Image 1 (tube, one colour):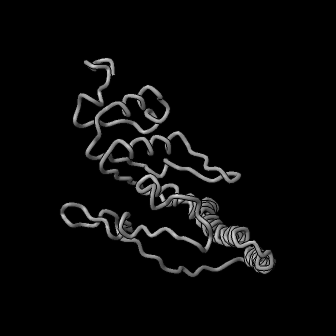
Image 2 (cartoon, one colour):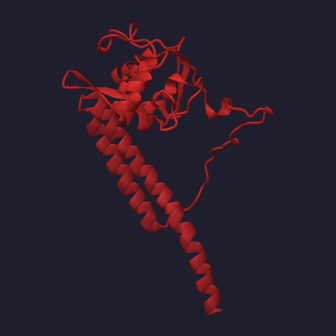
Image 3 (cartoon, one colour):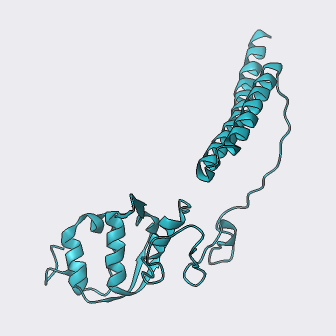
Length: 219
């Protein structure tokens, strides 16, 4: 900025790299962006941070979201990139997609009325679909399999108690009637049981070497 001849580096250079948060917090930078000629292409990484949401019937826009609107208005092509999944709320997702096409996603989303069709705007790739330039996988293959292990009587009693608790609370969650709350409760209960299994395995793995060392010392 200090080395700029005209005081607006965005008007002097054909290519520019700019930190998202720096631009979002600086009114001076945004004023220079708005005063600069239109860009051919703007690429935003970590674009999921450009978020907005509804609160009390009004749209609450973050400073990053407002920056996204400004950039979209100052370029012919806007590319938003992110490897972070969205929060799953359709209304928030449509606000986000409005950065790319404000006309198509105008107005608040209403359940059962309109769902976003982004097939012509967005490309989704899983890890299995990502390759290097030499056509080798970018991420190593992952394989899931079940490992059998024995529980001590105390561990078996604890597992059965947690399983009964999860089953009873899941049945209670089914009677809540609130779909979102029901899903949150069910997810939390499943995590509780899975963590119990993981902690049991970890405890056995940590205790086994200690038992071996103790046995060796006794011998």
